[in-house]
Every structure is written in structure tokens, then in C-alpha cells.
Length: 290
Image 1: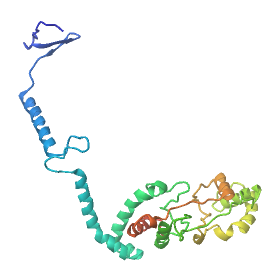
Image 2 (image 1 turned 30 degrees about the horizontal axis):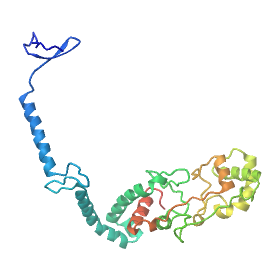
Image 3 (image 1 turned 135 degrees about the horizontal axis):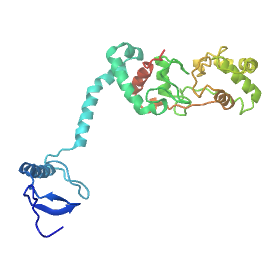
Image 4 (image 1 turned 90 degrees about the horizontal axis):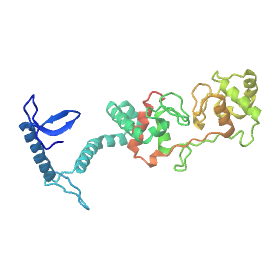
């Protein structure tokens, strides 16, 4: 930097006096339109701070002369939406599940509300697309532990599974055949092979043959002679390739040895009845409802 003023020889404009690697900056004045725009933004900012909430204070903030509140605006919008929905909620409450399913207006409203409620309350376990996960059933297929009718789905959501919240919760217990020494390890291995054979997944024919007798004695009463399952007891179908805890040999042996006991909350104690109905209709409509 130099105290002697420098004028660019090509443009005849004085430079700022700064130089970087032989490059000098012309000291051109800012365009008038740019300056006036800049001044206008300052005026606008001052006016905005006067009119609307702006600077924080120790215990509050400047509220502005217009008294505007975005929070209050959202509350108004929510109240308006609730008021618009109130009539439909009353219809949902008054209608039976079958009436909701067969009334286009109610069905559309219930499915939309059920999808929203599912995303908030159910997707954490069953997945955002209701595809399920290990230990959490897929709600899109036609395999149902306790039945897939509207009524049984509604009961499952309302009272839940194996919880201590509702006396009407679906409840069943599979014996711990290994942990409680009901069966020997070779028997568990054999019956696991037989169970896998029901869906064509067994790789040990001799063990599967030996396991059939154990299955008939210990398992058929709940799972059925052909492994078709029994919804009244929540006993899964073993004759198809749909598995809740995994369908490989290790997972089946684990289930037989230690049993499984998944728990679902009683949502009827946590959500209003109209929401439970909407959830039941939505889940039923996913494609696997009976």
C-alpha cells in the first residue's frame, strides 16, 4: 500500500491503493441504483422491527405494533382444521367398521386419518410402509397371527398383544421346549427340520421325518396338523415362507428352544376411538385384510 495516489493508465480511474500480485482495484463509486436499494432495505428492516416481533429482551421480546404471532396463526389454522373434521369424526364414531368400509366418504377419510396416525404411532415398529421387521409383522400380506378381519384388527389395536394394560389383550404363550427341558436338543433339531419341511425349506430329510412325531405330539394342537396355524391362539402358519423371527434353521431352533413373546400396547387406552377405527380401516386396506 502506498500513500501516493495511483491512476489506472487504461481507464483513467483512481485505484484504491491496494495491490495484490500486481493487480490493483479501481476505486469506482457504487451504482446509484444499488445504493438506493441498500438504503431501502435498511428502511424496510427498521419498519419490520417496529411492525412485527423482533429483538429479544430479558424476559420477553419486542412484539411489534401489529401484534402478529406466527404461533397464534398456527393455532388458528389447527382449530379451523379440527372444526372442519369434527363432523367426520362424529360420523366415524357413530358408524360400525363395516359401514365405514362400505361408505366411500367415510372410507376415504378413515384411510387418510389412519395413514397419518400409523406414521406417528405404528411405523416405528411395523415400518413406514407397514412392511414389518424381525419380530414385527408385515401388515401388507395375508398372514395374520390373530386374524385379519376388520373386527380382529380393531381388537388387536384396541387391546394389544400380551400387555398388562388391557384384560382383553390377545394372549398366548408358546412353551420353552428347550429352556424348560421339555424336549432334548436332538428332538428340537428334528422338529425344526420338520417345521422347515412344511414350507419346503428343510435340508435334512431323515431329521424331518423323525421330527414329525415330535411335532404331532407337541406342536400340532396349536399350529395345526399341516402347520396351517390357528388364529384363535395366535399360532402362526408354518406352512408358508412368511416368518416373523426368521425362517432359517438357527431362528427356528431359537424359537422352539426359548419361545417368542412379542408385546403390543393397548392403543385403545392411548388414542381416541375414532383414531383406532381409522387405524383399523387403514391397516385392513393395505392389501392383506380378510
